[in-house]
Picture 1 (tube, one colour):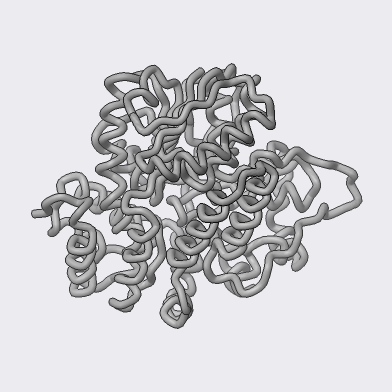
Picture 2 (cartoon, rainbow, N blue to C red):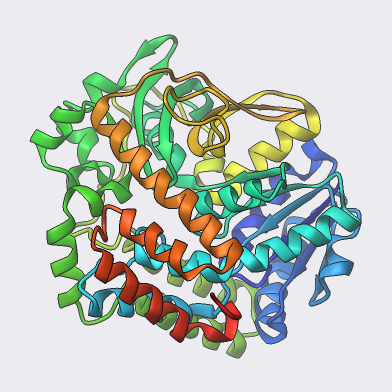
Length: 455
């Protein structure tokens, strides 16, 4: 089996190599190709990955290249994790929104739209090449905003694509860790959209443990749920995706972002620059791994972007001596993808939250709406688990944001400025025609190098 990572010089790629060392024998992995257009960064991150591969004595060969054809030819699985415009593109996205009085965040609202403007055309080019030289390949898209990118690729007829986001499965892993059971012993029911989803059940041995855990203050303190007021947690009675904070606390979030010394994008850019500088200067592999681990931990500590206190260490709820294998959770996006690849390669069914066409799972959503939903994955790919009707509050918000996504996907595919304004106008975090128009004009001007001509 051949696996290709497009954007292989990303700072998370070493986590993927560590995961592949575990999964390789189970999926008959023979080749891994890291492809990136940034040769210098590929040399640094790719070199660290090669050291990891040697350290783990992996059974596959690891290749580094800047040639997409070489990397993609006859691939069985492709991971897309690119950042068109680099870290500074994200910084611009966030600052432009904040200057206009809108939330500046990479995936939610205007910032997510701007990133999609740059990402979708690039991913489409890769997918067209995949159709030519690796027609059997499954594409696992990490590139943000994952749901919107996946929707656009589905809209143009590319069917073998799965949107990946670790936040879809965070409830499962928090519950498993707290109860001291293996992650696959917890069956969750997730519904919504990428970075706009809810978990309504978490069953262990057929019993839904979520209602009691949402009333347990110790459990709440082990995860991001402490960020939401008790009254709001009680109102929904569900585990909330962390990005819902931007919707449910919009004004507080905007004020905090506008008052901060640096945006999340500026923080990530600073940390990435420091990471590459230190890795460039070090020869010893242990020192390089330590630096990578330390800086990625610092980056993760502020991942949500609004946490005011560290999340407490999860501990088993009772006195079980269980030491569950939480490898997939520790690997984040990589773990979700590797579980999917294993299911497709071996036919062993796996249950996880993914971004896929609704296909009747959530009542009231169109069959071809890409939604974030619990799926069963087997040799034929992902199959959404039937969810049925969802509460009106979640349904109305999901439909509104999906309307934005459908309009945004078409606007970007057609490079249509009018559709782009309509899309942002519909987004709940914009909701103003004049603001939407100003943001679209700003983003087209700021990113003209990557966007081409928009009508």
